[in-house]
Image 1 (cartoon, rainbow over the protein chains, first blue to last red):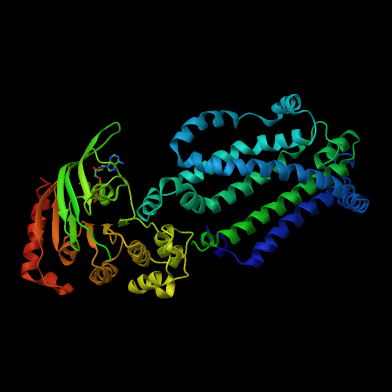
Image 2 (cartoon, rainbow over the protein chains, first blue to last red):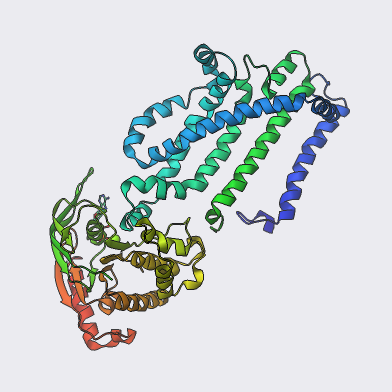
Amino acid sequence: MKLFTPYRAVSRGVTVSLGLAVWALVIGAWTLVTYGGQVPEMFLPAPGKVAATAWRLAEDGTLWEHTWASAKVVLTGFAVSSVVAIPLGLYMGTYRVVQAGLEPLVNFIRYLPVTSFVPLFILWIGIGFQQHIAVIIFGVFFQQLVMVADAARSVPRDLVNAAYTLGTTRGETVRHIVFPYTLPMVLDVLRVTMGWAWTYLVVAELVAARAGLGYISLKAARGFQVDIIFLAIAMIGLLGLLTDQGFRLARRLVAPWAEAVR
Amino acid sequence: MNSADITVTDVTLRYGGKQPVLALDRLSLDVKPNEFAVIVGPSGCGKSSLLYLIAGLEERSGGSITVGGSEVHGPGADRGMVFQSYTLFPWLTVAENVAYGPKRRGAADPAVVARYLEEVGLAAFAKHYPAQLSGGMKQRVAIARALANDPAVLLMDEPFGALDSQTRHAMQRLLLRVWDHTKKTVLFVTHDIEEAILLADRVFVMSGRPGQIRRVLTVDFPRPRHEDLVLDPAFIAMKREIMGLLKQDEE
Ligand SMILES: Nc1ncnc2c1ncn2[C@@H]1O[C@H](COP(=O)(O)OP(=O)(O)OP(=O)(O)O)[C@@H](O)[C@H]1O
Ligand SMILES: [Mg+2]
């Protein structure tokens, strides 16, 4: 049973066929219970129905319109959050004074449920695009901050000491040592939190949205259009998968040295 | 090639915390320019602490340290260091690691990098990442990296501690050859008595905590020294003397 040796690499063929097999199993089961009539169509649409809806909405352009609207919200919110969280997190993990100041507050805020802030955001920012990205930012920023700070803290002290003995100054430490050392870890943080950003999309579009995948699925729920809900969910999943692969690729490209390990 | 003396006068180091530790107690030593000085001492006697103090990576509680006549306040490129743990920058290739110091000073010279890689026998590995090297190779790059920065003194904290004895002997030969070419002042820490005698002009034997210099021995076996020297009666006598000095702490 070589396949079941812990941590042992398996061939590309096995990886791909296993991945496909599990998908086939899920879709197969879905097909079976819907066409077999076990579950009423009102609760679970047949795969063919969802595919047909997808085709129809793709052709008239509404699918792309809503996908683009959602992608804009998620990507903007995520970018704004990351641009601040990465440098701040690196400084927080490197300098104890920054950590001492920020950590108690950050650790309090990051356990607060995002949903409960939606009314506040509406009150403060009004409704619309800014309010939507505020939800995404609130959902990922504090998590990113803590995870990036952890990565920065993991830099071996003697690596920094070695840099000092080679002429690096204290002020250069973050830029010259902490940042390059933690880059692959930071990209992993981005990959994971990007997934969370997508999960907050529906919360973001809960109120006062005029477009977006979260918006159409909420609207569809009112009209019992289960096929559209399924389509929206599938689109969010696909976009998540795409960004995930994007970050994996970026990690391989910008930090090839981290791939050489082991 | 610059090279300087090290003077440590009455240096005290106290670590704070819940249980304060007096690591070094009024320790004094001096190393001459171009000298190869070796410190041996029991584990925990403060050998690493002393090197970190000279490197300026740790703050002394009292006393004075000068390198090349100027007082040590914080780290600087004039004092190169090779650590016991592997400290190559993993995101840089071997050649980029060696070029790191000169580049910081805006004086990157590919010829210098090539020369030191040649010196440690790793010219063929210039484009490898540290993760692709063995432990001995990593320490060789670390030595090349420290030397390429042209420090006045080279501090070495048990750099071969984690290596097997074969590799260790090869590394000792390599280090002596490089030292012969560069004539840097070297302060080398080890707990291996044979290594100390094989390498040193003078051996500083430290006492257990709090660390002090218990005895200074001048080693005048002619160079280059062959490994068979360890069988020489005079070598064995010196080894026995150092062992005796170290044993006093076990009682
Ligand atoms: N950061 C620290 N905080 C408190 N005590 C410390 C610290 N670093 C070292 N010590 C203590 O200071 C003493 C000297 O430590 P040091 O690492 O210099 O010893 P050493 O001679 O290099 O030992 P070894 O041969 O095991 O490497 C030890 O007793 C150690 O417990
Ligand atoms: Mg030590």
